[in-house]
Length: 505
Ligand code: FRU
Image (cartoon, rainbow, N blue to C red):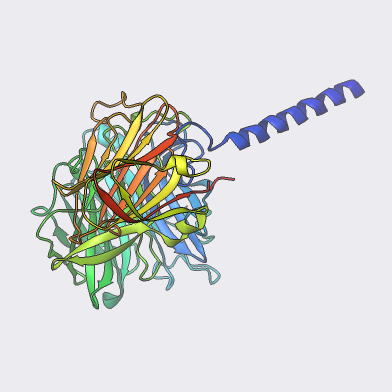
C-alpha cells in the first residue's frame, strides 16, 4: 500500500514537472512571435469585437480550436491592460444551430438601449455574422445573417439573443462582418456591413431592429475581390471632423492577395460620401488583413489587423498555432499636398517593452554598417529607428549563417519602400511568397524617418511617421543573427537599435 502510494506520488510529481516544463515551452516554438499576440495553439484569423472597458482592452478573434487550418469559426477571447501583454481567456462564442460565428464587433451599451442590462450592470453587446454551412451547401444565397449576444461580466460569458438573427439576408452571398458604432448626433447605432462588392449601412435604436440606410462603394475603390470587414469611424484633423471607412478586399491588394483599403469623406448618419480621388491602402505589405479599430476608446483610434494573407494563411509553416495579430497601431489623419491620408504607428505602450537602445548620431554610410556587431547580444526581436538627412537609396539587411536574408529598403529612383523576402527562408509553401513587396512613398519631405519592428518572423515598417507602412511575415530556417545597413552614400542624422522584451511569461 505504502509503496503504491509512494509510486503514485512520484508519478504525480513527474506529471506536474512535465506540465510545468510544457508551460515553459509555450510561446517558444520556431517562428513564435514574442511581442505580438498569437493564440497558445490552433488557428486564428480576423480580430473581432474589440472593445475597451474598465481598464481592459478586449480582443476577440476568429478561432478554430480543433485545427491549425481554418474551419468552423468561434470567437476566442484575449484581454490586455496595455495592448501588449495578453491573457488568453476561454472561448466566448461557439457555433450553434444558426451557424458558425464569423467576424463582427462589440459595443458597450452604456445607456442600455438593448434592454439587456441587469441589476445595474450595463451590457457588452457583440454583433456578429452567423454563417450557416448547411444552407450554403444546399446552394442557397442567404446563408449569412447578423446576430447578437450580450455579456454582463465584461465579456467572460455571453448569452445569445433569443430573437436571432437580428438582420436577415436579402439574397446576397457575401453578407457579413458587421461593425457597429454609436452615432451620437442621430442617437442611434450604425452598422457597416460588407455586402459583396460594396458596403451597406443600417441603423438601429436598440441593436435588435435594423433599418437599411444606404450603400457605398460599387463604383469606388479596389474591386479585385470580395469586400470584407469594414469599419466606419470619425477622426479629427485640421480642426475638423472627417469620416474614414476601412474596407478589406480579398484578393486584389497591391502586392497580391488580401489587403485593406480606406476612404476618407463624410457621413451624415445616413450616407457616406468619399472625397478620396485615388485608392488608398492602410498597409502596403502582404500581411495586414481584416483589421478594424477598438470601440469605446474616445478620440483614440486604435487598430489591429490579422498578420497574414488568405493567399497562403492555411499553409504558413508553423506547427502548434497558425496566425497572429499586427502590433496595435494608433491611427491619425495627416495632410500631404492638400489630400488627407491615414497614418498608423505602434501604440505608445509599445515603448514599455524596449530595452536600452544603442544610438548613433550624424553618421555617413558609404558601403555597409554592421549594426549587429556593434550591439551586445544581438537578437532578432528589435526596433530600429532612423532619420536620414536626404533622400538616398538604402537597404537594411537581416541575415543568418545559412545565407537566408530579409531586406527592407528605400529606392530613390522609384521613390518607393520595399520588403524583399525572396531569400528569407522557408518559402516553398506558396509560389508567390518569395518576392519583393513594394510600397509607394506618400510623404513629400526631403528626408526619411523610419521605424522597423522585427519580431523573429514578422517585419513592420512604419515609414515617414506611419504614412507608408508595410507588414510582412517570413520564416527563416534559423534565426537571423546579423543586421547590416547598406548604402552608397547616406547621411543618417540618427540611428538607434533597441531589443524588445518578450510579452510571454
Ligand atoms: C475575413 C473573413 C471574414 C469572415 C471571416 C471568416 O478574413 O473572410 O469576411 O467573417 O474571415 O473566418
